[in-house]
Length: 120
Image (cartoon, rainbow, N blue to C red; front, top):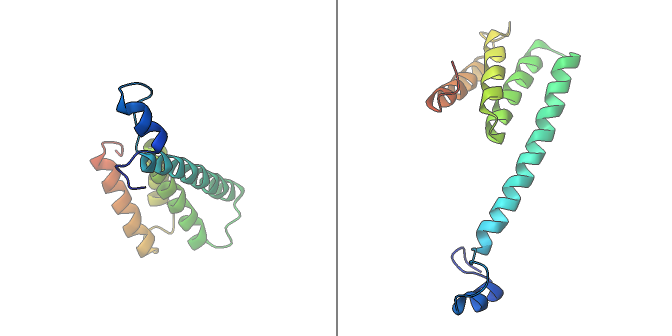
């Protein structure tokens, strides 16, 4: 079934103007997948936050990477305020200037958040 098609039940019920409004079945599936993906990303973010808080990173490089991942996952989940907070923590990390790829990715993330008027 294509994105603009509806299932047979909706099409039959709506033909006479009765029943529920038709909803493209592709849209419903995408919403369910997006909700599931956000849940998985939230689980990953929670694990990374716990690792940072417990000091489990075995090197400063991994610690700053965890900081960045929390910021990135927060943005992907839609928690932009938390993404901004973790981006600031990443930029304040002692390894920020040494970790060039993380520094560049964090700056890009901050620019995206600023465009959304979230980052300060």
